[in-house]
Image (cartoon, rainbow, N blue to C red; front, side, top):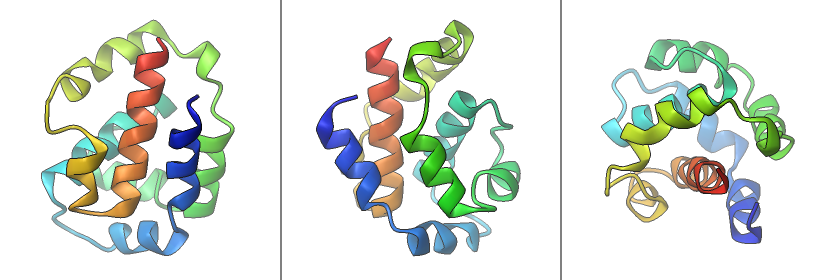
Length: 116
């Protein structure tokens, strides 16, 4: 994984993720990035499920992303990412306007997709 992506993940603050969990109607970018993360982690992709699983323990989520086995990603998961990564707005720069945490997660998803 490129160093700048690891640095993006390292810059995600636990409190930023906690704040996202409290949002009942998040920006579309937030839901799309979390759906893409959920696909790679084998979780349900709707916002309520993401809040209950991915955001239930922000520290565990960050550890999971750091330790993610990028060499053993299911081809089906990579294919499911296509609608997200093909969207020109699905990029860290756009996501950073919404949340630094979402920008880091977006960069991570794009790096995993690019690796494959």
